[in-house]
Length: 237
Ligand SMILES: Nc1ncnc2c1ncn2[C@@H]1O[C@H](COP(=O)(O)OP(=O)(O)OP(=O)(O)O)[C@@H](O)[C@H]1O
Ligand SMILES: [Mg+2]
Image 1 (spheres, rainbow, N blue to C red):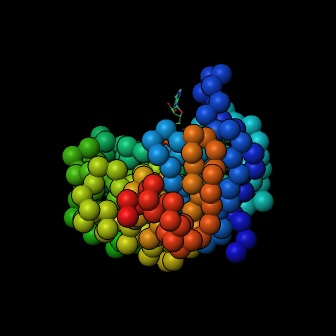
Image 2 (cartoon, protein in one colour):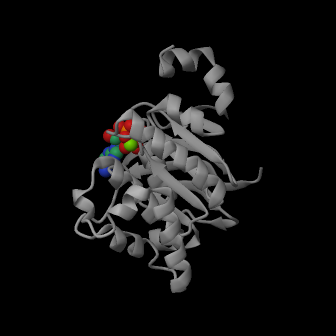
């Protein structure tokens, strides 16, 4: 598969501190790619680098465009939606208003309504709570809303930062199952950052392993699952 996103020798900085030390990775068009790594490895920073939220060096290409150095809104408009860690719903707005905000760049009202209907189809709990304030939703419902809101942008690439964080196993399973359906039905490619390695490798087709700001391994999800050292260090069996 062709690469939708290509990062080459990307460094990222917080002030003078270099947190990403020249990482290279790709996200295949139509695929689900995961970036794995321990706390502090630089996973969140990698997504922030793609979205233009942190100072970078190196090259990031997306769908034929060079996007490093572009403003975050431009990157979003090119087709990248970012669900940050800690969710990112607008807590004082209703579920429905959150979805509308997600579609702010779209002009065709009928299409927006159709997308909203599809989101409620994926996540029926959101339909039941259309008028409820986002801040009063459960953690799982907020994650569903954050993902739906990002999809309302109709992105080509969805960046997901630890969607499983703080959620019960059953809800994680539900969300990950739906992510697969969304990947196929919406034709959206996904870059998933996760600490839940087993779940991420079950969903993704390709994985990159990050260690203190460097990529130390990559391969098919199957290859990483079968790797003895990965199993022992990250999967615990
Ligand atoms: N705003 C910031 N200012 C300075 N340093 C930061 C900032 N944000 C992150 N860092 C540092 O950058 C490094 C990578 O952080 P990052 O959040 O990307 O890790 P992560 O892999 O997402 O970790 P986690 O699994 O805990 O979410 C860490 O050492 C962190 O302390
Ligand atoms: Mg993080």
